[in-house]
Image: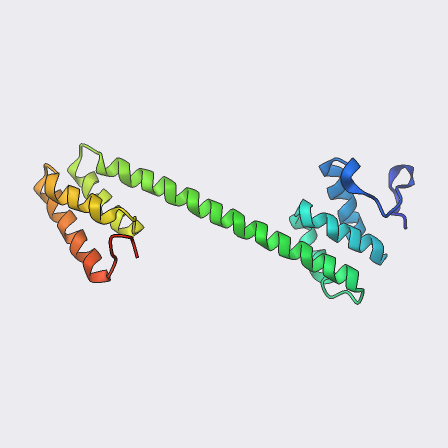
Length: 168
């Protein structure tokens, strides 16, 4: 099979190992649009690693192809895309939690009693594994009475919610 309008009449099956990423992306998108099942299957197989969102719609259509190789390759590519999206969402969530924890730690270390009180609330909201230990420390040693009281209230709230020392 041949994809029209490609330089030097590129023929398939084509091994993508010798191509740069941009060429594989472009060729695989073109192959997905082809009427030839061999090209469609090749394009879908490429998309299992390219993971180009621009291919998702066509892969969705090819996932119901009457050709079993095309159908299988398209579904595998869609599965790989979904997994990559889930991995990215998880990494973003971990990064956001770390950034939030850093802000809470900064609040707890602040000279301002109001900010330390906000940090106490942040520990509870994060359900940090070390929340009880940190709150006990604040409840006993913070120089400001209001912050110590807030830490004690937070400890009571954690106890009432059933959250234990391990954050569960």
